[in-house]
Amino acid sequence: MDQLLTEDQLDHFRTLAAEIPHPRELVVDVLRAIQNNHGWVPDEGVELAGTILGLSPLQVEEVATFFDKIYRRPVGRRVIHVCDSICCWSRGGEEVARLLQEKLGIGLGETTEDGIFTLLPTCCLGACGEAPAMMIGLTTYGHLTSDRIDLVLERERREAP
Amino acid sequence: MKSDQLLFKNRRPGETTFLKGYLETGGYEGLKKAFTMDPAQVREIVKASRLRGRGGAGFPTGMKWSFFPADKPGEKYLVCNADEMEPGTYKDRELLLADPHQLVEGMIISAYALQAPTGYIFIRYAYERCARNLERAIIEAREAGFLGKNIRGSGFSCELFVHRSAGRYICGEETALLNALEGRRANPRSKPPFPAVRGLFDKPTTVNNVETLASIQHIITGGAAWFKDLAATVEGAGTKLYGLSGHLEKTECHELPIGVPLRTLVEEFGGGVWKGRRFKACLPGGASTPYLTAEHLDVSMDFEPLEKVGSRLGTAGVTVFDDTTCMVEATLNLNRFFARESCGWCTPCRDGLPFVNWILEKIERGDGVMEDIDMLRDQLRNITGTTFCALAQGAVGPIESLLRLFEEEVVDHIKRGRCPFNP
Image (cartoon, rainbow over all chains, first blue to last red; front, top):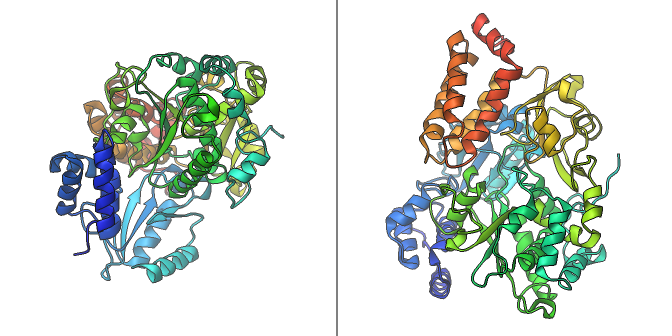
C-alpha cells in the first residue's frame, strides 16, 4: 500500500493541528492529501485523519462521505467527472457521457480494467461557457467533441502514474 | 453597447493579471483610500452605494454589514463564498482566472470595515487554478504591505486563508459553508442565530460572494453615487457579471451595467440563438430561477424588474433554450441536480425532490396522467417554506414556472402519451 501521508505531511499537519485553535477545520485538507497520495481514502486514512486532528473515526467519516470528490472506495488512477447539469445537457452533455462510456468500455460509476480511468457524473463544473465539459483530476476540459475526447483521454492515459 | 469595466478591466484571454499589472491599472488605490477613513465611514459608503449581494439572493451588502458587531472586540470572521456551483453560473471563476487581486483587495477593505482580522476564502474543488491564483495574490499582497500586521500604520492586522472544498452544491449555502469550513458535515444550520451573531466557530461572521467583495474597492475609489449611476436602471447599482450559456452562438461572460435588457444579452452579446433557431425560454440567473419566455426579452436584468415578471436575477448566469427544447426534459435535468445535491437533512427536500423527479420522468416517457399535474402542484406546496435552507425553494423555481408558462406542453406529453420533441 502507498503511504497515506509522507513523514513531511504528517509533521506539517501535526504541527499545524497543535498550533491552531480548531484543528478540525483541517479535516478536508488531510483527507485530500491522503487521497492525493493513495488515490482514495481507505478506512486507515479516516482513522489517521482522526488521530492527527483529535477526532473520532465517525467524525471524520461523516465529512468524508458527504463530499462527492472524496473517494471512499478504490478508483482508477484518473477520475473523470463528466458534467450532467443543464448547460452541458443543452449542448450535448448526454452524448459526451455516452461517448466516454463507449470509448472506455465502462458504465458510469465503473473503472476500466487496466485501472486507469473511473467515470463519474458530476454537477455543474462552472465551465458553462465551454459546455460540454468534464474534469479529470483537477483539470477542466471544455468544448468537448468526439475527437477532443480522444485526444484528452490519450494524454491523460500517457500521464497517469 | 459599451460598458465601464471594473471587475473585468484586466481580463485578457488565457492570462492572469498579478500584482504588477494590477497596480498599473489603479490596483490597491481603493485600499489606500479606505485606510485613511474610519471603518464606519467605509461601511457607510458601501451602504450608500446600494450594492446588493452578487451570490444569488441579492441582499443589500450595506445592510448585511450593519448587523455585524464591527465595533465589539473579540474574534470575528469575514468569509468569502467562492463555492460557485449553481448550474449556469461561472462568473466568479472568470474573475478569479483573470484577476485574483480584485477579490484580495476587496476582502482586505471589507475586513477593515468590519474589523474582522481573519478572512477565509471558501473555494470549490473544481476551481483549483483559481485557488492557486488567490494564494499567489495573497502572498504578493502581503509582500507589498497591503496584508499582514498593522496595515498601512492603521493598527489593523489581517490574514487571509484559502480553504479548498471537496464538492457538493449545498456548501454554497452560507450556514452549510460555515459547517464545512469548521470541518463538520455540511448540513445547513437553523437560523436564527444568524452568522452575524454566531457564525464561524460560534463567532460573528459575515459571508459575502466573490463578486460582491470585489466590487468594494471600486465603490471606495469612485464613490457611492458614481457606483450607483453605473446601473442601467434607476433602482439598480453598479455593474454585473453576466455569464451566458445554453443555445446561444456565443457563450461568454461579460461585465455590463446591472439592468441591461435581456434582449441585449441574448442578441448582441450572445450573438442570438444558435443554428438560426428561435428563442423559447431562458433561466435568467441560474438553475433555481424561474423560466422566462420570449415575451420577457425586454425585461431589465436587475433584481426588482425580474421579480415583477415572476423570476429572479439570481447569479445572472443566463441559460438560453431554443425552440427544439423539451421544457419537461430541461426541468427534469434541473430537478435531478437539486435532488442529488440535497444534503438530506430536511424531509420535504430529501424525499420531495426525488418524488418530483419520479413524476416528471413519468410524464416525459409518456406514462403521465392529468392527475400528475395536480400532484406536482401539491409537492410544490409541501416543499415550499418547510426546510432549513433555500435549496428546495430554489428547486421549486423551474417546476413552478414550467407549470405556469408551459402547462400546454406538459399536457401535450400526457395526451400524446409521448414526448412531442422525441418522436
